Image (cartoon, rainbow, N blue to C red; front, side, top):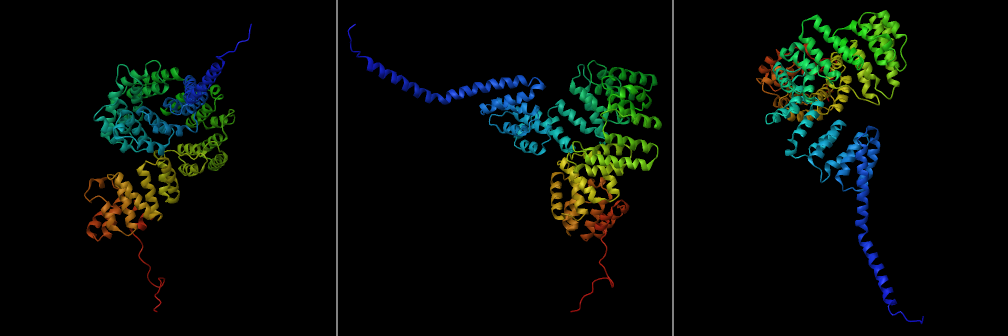
Length: 585
């Protein structure tokens, strides 16, 4: 074939180069969208895996890892952040609160997201975080039922019952939300409630519980009856209500025991009582043996506890072993309890052995052996770092009326690495013990620890301020703090009298009178001798002698502590030869 020149070759070369250049430019311009698309696909893939893994508790750790990758690949996805918060909370990640805070503040976060975050803060007991985020909500959002429920629950957990009650009642007046009614009922049936409040609480329980198809909320309302003294309970709530809710299939042991208690309280027949106890043991004896044993002891069926807790059954369980030992002590079978204590099962802790020996020695009236056992228990508690065993000592000592030892253990508890202590409502006896013995420094130490645990408990904070004043410590800042408490709850007399005492110590009786209610105010009906002494002292030092004398007549000086007496009746200045003499110069 003769050679011919290809005139189109340069054109083809030029066209190829053009295609390469255009392709390169297109790839350059599309590099970010392509990468974003890839990241989005990978994020969505990991997100789906995370959601699948959340369905099984064994895979929560994997769910967290998948959700974290999805979030890192697509930080703009609120869905990825939602799943990450859920997975981190379930897997107990240390970064849960950080992620939750990010979700709350995310621009696209909904009210449902904010409510979910606040629930996490509440469950994690992050009080500061809860309050900080709650304060960012709009007034309209705070009025939504879910937010009202959570806020009220938070206040109740902090023993701020008055604030919770006001919040719930203002919302119930407009909308009788059943969850709000349940929380209000839990406040109204407190042991310290007035007869009127108890009646209101029981009316709410009746409204919530009586239903053709009782739901979980109805059962929760029903269980509140277990916190009411039977003598103060409306008889019409007993019996039928208990049997109707407790007799259904699928109920928990808690539900059934609550129903059994009501049925027992409502019957006068020994045969009916025996039938109820037998039925409860048959239904839940094998499923919840510890709970049934504790219940039998609580209702005075000590002999049946021993029949129920057989030796064979209890030798396999440290918990049941201890319950049988206590049952033997309570039944007066001291020798049998001593023999039983000689063969503890594996797994029972040494501190529980020493506490059992203390119980046994106390039952035998062997004081030296009892004190030795207590001391050994304290040594074990001091050496144990993974659990706060001082709380165990506190519990057992309280049960055995050794308030001195219970108080000692309680004062040790905050110093432990796991320094959690019981709520203030459970510590009345130790705090009274410290007060009677005028151990004010110890009482203040304990009150400070409680205040850290319950920062919204105004009465606890007031007690701490009062102790500071009695001890002459931080008087000026304590008085200022007392004034802030008065601004929050002006209707509470103890807050006002504490603030007034601070002004008295600072030498300003006029300011003390200004903060106190008028002499004829109804608030003085609940006043203690210390409250009235503060009023009398403020009047006297303001020159209102006649008015003060009438108040002093209502003060029982025997009810005042020595530090209070020194404040209200300071000793006169020294005179005579022991007093400092002027130099005469």
